[in-house]
Image 1: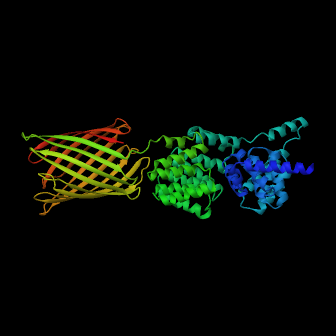
Image 2: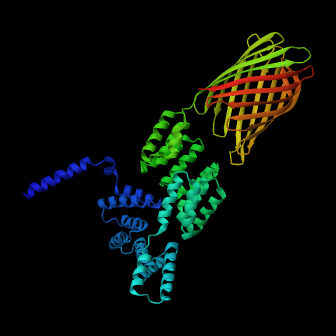
Image 3: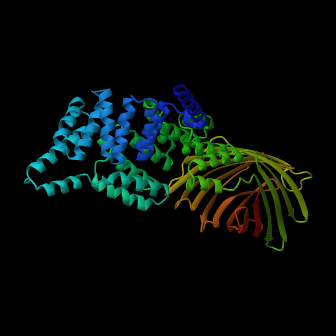
Length: 583
């Protein structure tokens, strides 16, 4: 009978193991422990305790897991469970300082000051640099002095005092509430909760770091940096504060500083998943897609359920132009973190429109009875990849009863997020007044990244060679463009230099301002005193111009422009209409 029972029990055990989820069986003690530590540091005490208990079920004598379990139970304010975990750890390793510190904390919270003090003093003497132990010793001594200065209370008062002392610590609850509000995007509410917690525990580095992250998310960068510095002053080298500074540099658009900071963290903790995730995020900003992919994959190898890494993989795929793969990664992240506003926002972005059609027409009214000129064009561009765009352009111009058709091809290439260039070529079959053939090139270098008040600022240059029936003209136009008012106002200044094949030179300039009056409505205006290339001749002109553009919808933009141009032989007034459609 006993043999039959044993066989039945063994069969049940085998079936239970066979039916267990593969992900659970695949987790080792070290993996469970690492996930638990991360959860506890994030104030997820219930999750941490569950993971640690699973690790201890596989390896009951793991002193490290027992100590972490004790601190998780302290976070849940379950003093008996914390005492049991620390006691077991000390039975395995009697000189384990963290276990002694945890036991001292348990005794202190339980009101056993005489038992708590020697434990805390032992840890403080063995590790003089342990600020937490020194602080605990100080708190215990203050509590003993306070108790000594009071008359001995009656039994009923003692009981009430014990109950009062065992009142739950409000800090973990406040931290959890602040975390929840921050994840929900309610930053002012989260800040209020964290500041309330800081009043109760002014030297709690976890609160200081959390407050720094909330302020950084609110773009109050100087205040955020101040709280990270306060945390580092209390605990030099504190990893969470150092990583907070990395995030701050990313939010400020200071990619070089973010790179230097995260490289410093990875030099000491190369397997830290948060640092690796930030490394991938910075590599994305640097357009180093190979490094970004490597960093995100390392995070997922350590933590397969890491949402930030999955979102990073999605952002990487989107940057590479593979929107389908990006959405697949975002859906994986959303399955792990349902309701994530960050992930849902990315999924709400429509697939990229790779085609763009530009159509426009311009009519010029000439003075002195010279009639009208017309200039119409149609262009089609295709975004071959996030970095490369191919485009073709056709122009039909009429002047004094003659008509020319010009065909142009162009390639734009972004080599880095800050540097791009283009080349073009154009031909005009049977040209009457336009160039028979042309070649051009240009480049743009962003020297200042976008910021809240100022930027981006870019240096640009355009160069072109035009061959006419009777002359050739080369023009070079360096120009600078910058934005202010949170990017709403753009200002540019262009110098124009032109020279023909017999040595005739002409110089001038163009000034322009672009203003985003609303997210959909833009206006521009400018003034030019620069040479116009007309049938191979360099004609001095002065022009005042302006116009508007309106985004009717995301894929459709309408344009209108007007200009007045003065030439030596006549003046002309220009009126133009156009549209851009993306699909």
